Amino acid sequence: MKKLSILILALVVVLAACGPKPTPTATPAAATQAPANTMDALIQAAKQEGMLTTIALPHDWCNYGEAIETFKARYGIQVNELNPDAGSADEIEAIKANKDNKGPQAPDVIDVGFGYGPQIVEEKLAMPYKVSTWDTIPNEVKHPDGYWYGDYYGVLTFEVNKAIVQNVPQDWNDLLKPEYKGMVALAGDPRASAQAQMSIIAATLARSGSVDDVMAGLQFFKELNAAGNFVPVIAKQATLAKGETPIVIRWDYLALTDKDALAGNPEVEVVVPKSGVLAGVYIQAISAYAPHPNAAKLWMEFLYSDEGQLIWLKGGCHPIRYNDLAARGVIPAEIAAKLPPAEAYARAVFLSIDQINKAKKIISEKWMEVVGAEVK
Image 1 (cartoon, rainbow, N blue to C red):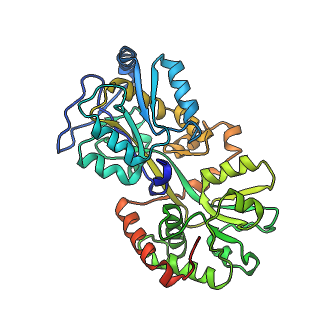
Image 2 (cartoon, rainbow, N blue to C red):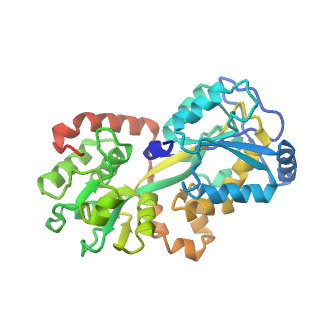
């Protein structure tokens, strides 16, 4: 599925100004940004197009179902949803395959893993556009020329079965305590799983204060394994509930989804660790060949408005403008109550693509040599 690239997170946005679609160039063109006094014109242009084509947006992923229905009702624009279960690579290929096709199989917008950012720029698959809220999107998670920007992110957390774990761990070093013998698991095989690999990078950050020496994270898991605390099982909601893996290192939005699904049977606590808070991001972009460029720009304006960002937050995904929303006190209490404290997310570290790829290579090659635990 598209969202399997989930842990390579980090940033996005795209789209050119209201009007004719610019021809992509090797050198990024200056992105347009919709000031408030042009929004009415953008809305009218989008309504004239009458359609937005999306791809790979499952309705239960980050509450996209509510986002799509709200957009349709607000603007009277139909949404043509292509292959909700597609992957990020499928989205890229859909743009390529429909460059000369203005029909219903050509996506206007894409939502892909962070690692695809350079590709869509290098291959001239996106058009530049800066949304009205551009300045509140962190610089680390947006292309400076507006070809893509982060939409939402998660951080790695400890998902804990409280029926078994009496003292809930609050930080990475806590996991080494004897009381957690046979309890700690990853949500994937570190030799292949992005989520598991990002977990090791997070442990690296907690131990060394930097993400650039991933051997520190491997050493942490070596100690965890030697202490008998590490369980070499790919953890899932079922293994957590049954007590086979009472402590799971998992993305917050997946852990929070488990918590809601289990509904107290057993009670689950989701902890953002005090150190080593690592974020993973997805990015949004507008196709350079979008059949409905104005509807695509309006969709971006909607997603990056306070309303759109809060819709994602309701789905357990932290919107890219989360810190801005929290600082202005506009997050409803009923949504905030379901999430870990806002201050925990202020410590989140976002990686560059080069950092991610370098660390993943070392982890996949050195896991068995250093840690020696075959995760199945």
